[in-house]
Image (cartoon, rainbow, N blue to C red; front, side, top):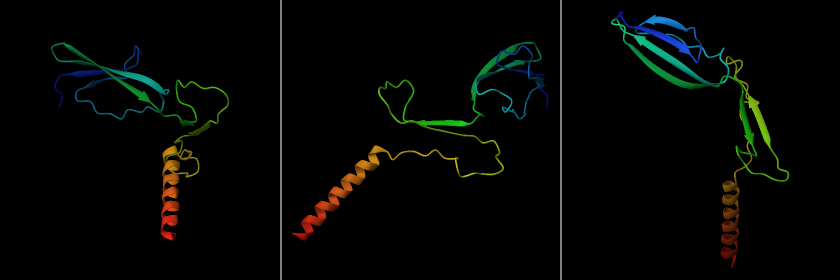
Length: 132
């Protein structure tokens, strides 16, 4: 099913291509050997007459452990002392699932505390008015 078009695949700014294939191309792209961060696939196609088409596909690799931080956000303005919770967990062995450490513990959000206070106030009001 070759239509005379070749596709050359480059990764980032590497001078050597990942491969030269006849179109259509179908393959498994393994990112486990790539460093975490921004990368770009550069695809160059050449048809039988020699004309070229170029396409860039930026993507982000995130194979390393996930890092979750609670207590401070990016570009925050802070002073004094405050608590920070950091959790890191990876997917090193995907054949077994370990519950401990696979979820990031979080503190109770403010809106939940507000709902509890409103409900407790309503319950106290209801109790007092029904007794009178």
